[in-house]
Length: 391
Image (cartoon, rainbow, N blue to C red; front, side, top):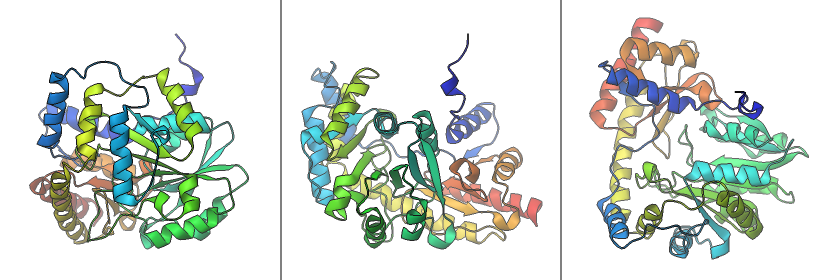
């Protein structure tokens, strides 16, 4: 049997692989603390679980519309209007099996051989892989601690070529936790003005924002950006529903939604019918108190983790403004993230993800989506590892 050649250039997810390895080692009886998964440790709020149970009892167990039910799309429309002042119609929304599926559909429907997609680094591991699989070429813009891992208008302008089709923004960012302000987005918008470049904006972590800051949706900064922006979002992170598989796209381009629906209809059909019902409750404000409770706990963990890492000689990290990750700088002690993470797992039983997986060497990603006691013990082990191996 010969595997299709298009699979040769597709790399496996490093984050998934490390998470799986950590679970396997733990199952073998080894003392493993894993900070590799991008998944809240909180349970799905009760009000949402009750909505799902009610859906089952009421017989919502049949096929539904490929692009999502009217009820769930109305909930998305209301949410985007309430939160960001954005107005969409039913035929400008499509629901898919998680945001990763939404992105895949987008790239498949829009990217052709030779098209360039600008991706700020560090980036979520899936972005460049899906671009390449779709025949496109990822073009990376490097960032670091000095700009809090955000690109500048000058960098964007320099990266644009006649082949540029898409700018992909992730705010708040996985893995850095970077959050673009309205002014920063406006400066990027000015560069794009007068071009045909689309903006894909992954806003999955929008509800996980710290220090009293307000999240700015990319599509909301001005009318020009609204027209060119394709928003990808979902309920996995903020509402602790990773396993439910629900992502959505909102765009003013009705033809794009139609194309995505056609593709999805031949691949997966509809999202799980129970999830569709539960998502309405997740989006309509019923779980807002639960979301805020989780956000506050994440903020508390962030503060402890940032302080603890910055107390370790030789490593440092900037304080993220969103999401639940730290992107920890290890350049002072060598910067080989693959070796650092492999040795840390072997010697101290701590699983983190090398920065190289996110396109930025010299760092590792640490997820603080776990309890405070585990975080404190994990960083204590990192401190011991650094002192014994890099002093």
